[in-house]
Image 1 (cartoon, rainbow, N blue to C red):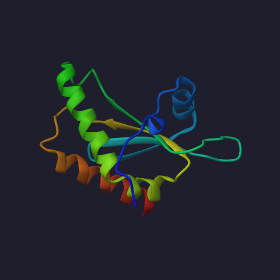
Image 2: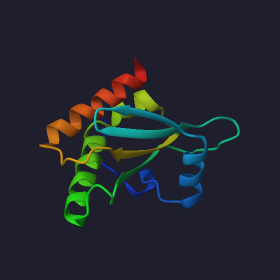
Image 3: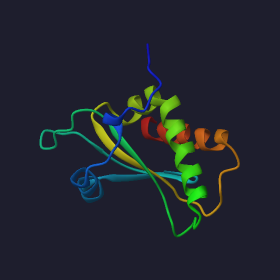
Amino acid sequence: MDKKSYPSHEKLKKKYEIDLLFAKGKWLSVDNIRIIHLKSSDKLLIDNHKIGVSVSKKFFKRAVDRNRIKRLLRESYRLNKSIYINAFGDQSIAMLFWASKELPESFSVVENQFLALCKKRTG
């Protein structure tokens, strides 16, 4: 059974992992969502998948807006974790970004864009 959760060991927090991700990761965009991802190889020992979420302070001055978008991005990942793992792999690190100046209309917009991002990666 697929657990729909976002536990602490799946959160991208360590500075050296984030630096590695930005140094060697690959970018992918769909509509307003961007992702930078890095799969594990022989040189990179990544235990399991980790994902982080970020929203630009430049576009959203109010923390309320940034936090809302981050919650929506995390929730779309949490509910569609199995699709994400099929697309990006079980041993990978990634970071999601909201790349638009407008707030998303609803959760369904964010979720559909997240699913399109996963589909673009597999297809």
